[in-house]
Length: 186
Image (cartoon, rainbow, N blue to C red):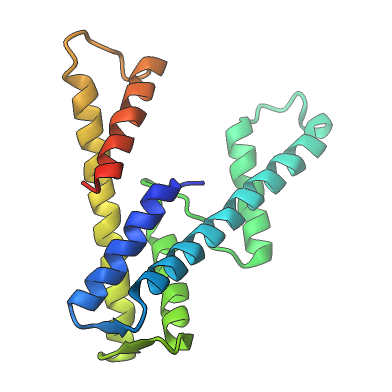
């Protein structure tokens, strides 16, 4: 999954609470609303994991036909994922960063639709303004996460002994520092 569960929880919480604090929405049960948004994001990204697995199976099934061709496994998986996603009408989260702009917009549309159906949620702005506020909230939290990742990288870089960025040790320390920052909500 492109987003770890603690990040999904943090993004959901901060997005919903930001909407409430800015007077865009009101929720009779904010914690429930946060849980619904987190569940929606998790379920959506789980579909992408299923698509990735289906793409791997497709490439594996056609491995004999592909032998001898000068093709990279990664590009074959990406092409198969694109085909499976297109067939399912699913927007992939490919691109730089954890979620592409298209995926963020897709999640915005799903959260927006969820808010419209939820009797516990009332909104005080025009429909398009609600959609834009959700999108800005998601983008803001993903930008915070990018800064969090950079902060974790900097912490590893500032260890007295130089650890090459490509090494497993760098990656392990980065993950440790990133999780600490995520757990602190920074």
